[in-house]
Length: 205
Ligand code: DC
Image (cartoon, rainbow, N blue to C red; front, side):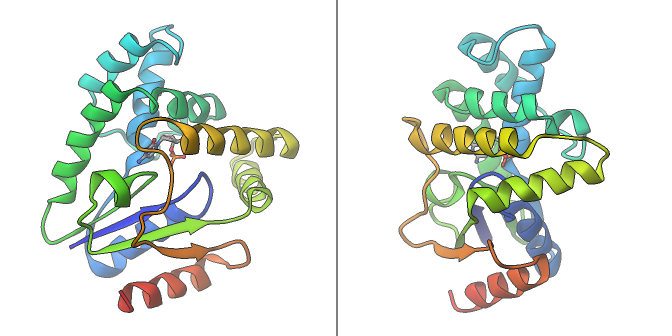
């Protein structure tokens, strides 16, 4: 059983996917953390995220990152992840990794941008989770404040919009709902209500 959860940054897809995995007893993969790990490796080497060769080498030696590593969550790594994710060679390495993971019994929940369209087009359930950019920027701001970081709302909103545009307009595996995806807008929903709505969509699939 495979559940694909796609959507833009800070849409709530990660929280939902993690809860769904624990609800069903499935494995969970945050595929964004793989692109983040590639980006972090590139930056650590002193290379720039636009360096396709450095990104490809980092992707080829990818190992499962600790998704809770705060270094993976910085705004610099978020932007760089979206850049390295546009390189076909990077995506090819990450694709292989994700497909192996998705095949782990008894089932897996993967969240990302292209799970329902490219990584697991055969997924049993596909959710596309969205929220208004302003709501997503606000969530990110509160999340960061809780971690003791002070960020600027307008800058966060601009970063989110830039990342959406890059993820949606790239030539390979752009962010878009699969034709058979169920849409869930979490703009006005708290986590619990969004989770219940996702369960209803899954049960109706
Ligand atoms: O989900 P996230 O914000 O952690 O993802 C970071 C970046 O990685 C995102 O801006 C685009 C890229 N990504 C992708 O291209 N495909 C995925 N399946 C997951 C993430």
